[in-house]
Image 1 (spheres, helix red, strand yellow):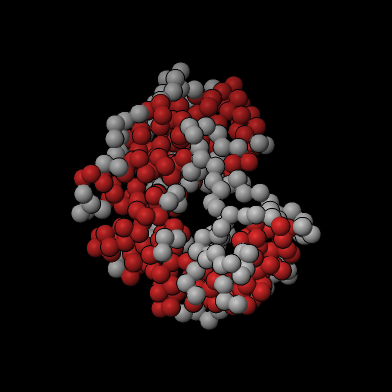
Image 2 (spheres, rainbow, N blue to C red; image 1 turned 90 degrees about the horizontal axis):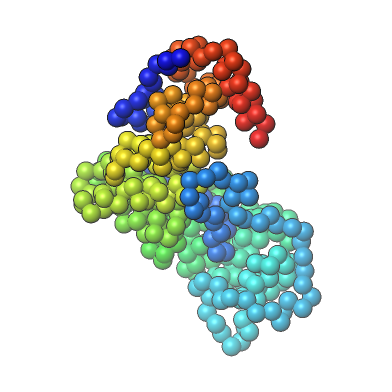
Length: 365
């Protein structure tokens, strides 16, 4: 049987990629436990991402534990904490208890230090209250301690309290103060604050001039491993006038980093860039494998593109049944593609049956 050519040739991204994401310069509310080391699962190659990786590698908190001998434990020095002979340091041991899940112990150790004005201990208390660890969840108490720590110069607290001021859900909104705190946290090296402050700058000054002003903050955040920033940087480098050629040449590198970090839109866009030769040479086979990762994770556009790749044997030998499977899955999700409708109707009854069975099996995973 001869199948109609669908979306082949150059300009693969332009074929029915109307849902393709363009980087949205809007504020992202990132409520991560930034007092702890980042725990991420990098994709070392284009492969299916497991459920454990989907959980971002962050262990679920267990029951509330209290360690009776925890006062003798040794823990790493928290960022920004000052070692003082008088404290032992209780703040360090509080962080150690927190990291091991001994939340009541962490509260008992951190509270006296927080009341004495220790910004790291204040931030730790805010985290405990915000997450309801060892104490009933209280965003009012979390906001109080974040504000205290932010005033004392703790970058994590400045970031968290800045987000609260922007959102205005638990505190009175104050955009001007939020932006001041976000900039302080960004300049102090907080990676998430750098990403958010970059977006604040772009929102305040839409267009290339605002993007170029924000560029150093996107770069610093991306270099620290924030996948959102890596994706944004790739798009800025490839799409913005005025970006030096040396930086533009690294756009695909940053898109790959974001994809390997599991950033959903980057998985799709990196596949498209490889297939279309955006930011580098075309690589159909690698593009196919990354498109498969995105499709297996449920990206509807990627599922539609997988059908096209199989029909036209781009990066693969081609398989009408597999093409039919991906067509069915994308169609079920609401992706309308008339050219694929015609393709599917041209399959034999047995091929349609196999494609439907494959799609149903995929849905049971």
